[in-house]
Amino acid sequence: MMHSQRTTSFLVLVFSACAGLAALLALWHVRLAAKIQVMQRQVSQVDQNRNLALALGNEALEYSKRRPDIRPILETVMLRNVPRSGSNSVPSVTSPSVVK
Image (cartoon, rainbow, N blue to C red):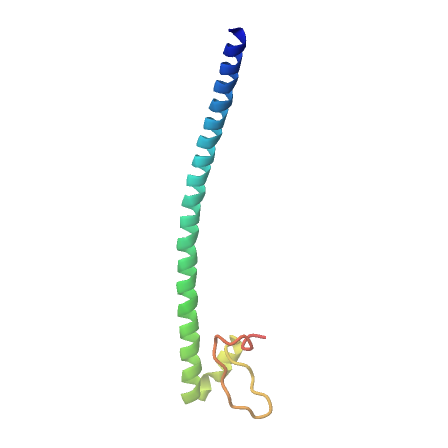
């Protein structure tokens, strides 16, 4: 009879430890999920700002085709490369070769 009580006590202890650990892991999961939601909102905001900047840059490049006097400004902010060997092409802002 004494052996059965020890086994029962041991199993209750193990079950309680597992339940406590499961509760801690659930709480940890909830906190991390909340952090992920905050980060997702921040990433969305950064994406919006990036898209706005790219649109503004592309608009400035298109404007520079009609008004070449803005080209030195675009070159200083690295939106436009200095033309080589008489090339008159204007790269888009999204091309990887724009910023060197």
